[in-house]
Image (cartoon, rainbow, N blue to C red; front, side, top):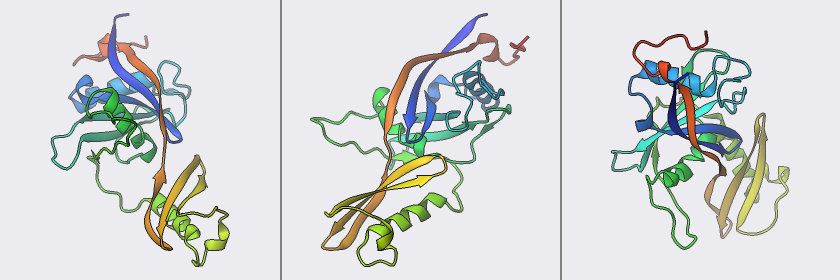
Length: 221
């Protein structure tokens, strides 16, 4: 069977894992793009045995990234959740875990310059989704911050060390994340999540060539 090779990076982002693509390497037509992503991840199949999805909602995730045309962003990041056991791709949400890998991917693909002399790198990502009416993790971060502020009503709930920079690990049903809190003279000056990412694979994912056409055939027969 003839195959089409699509450049792809597999990365762990936070407590998830996903396939990262440049937008230019995927079809422009939404229906065709969905078909390609389903084939790449191996959906619909509970095991995703014919793709790289991993058979779990935490690993059947995709990041589609392009150089941003916006003056206030470096890259555009579109998150796609490929449903494991349905022929469906969901673009209606965002994933902070996969977002953790967007910066490293942008470096790998030359979309942003790497840091020099061991310095830090900050990227500005634009997420072209409809806004969430609420994001539950913000509440967890707020509570974690309150736990780390001396004198707050929940300060006694957390055991942390001394110092102006404090960390607190927050568990959730699918993993954990760390909140970093910075104090100055006893006052909160910054608070945020710490998520890491790691490059797992850099190469190409193969899909049946017949899928990448305007008149696809059934490649499962």
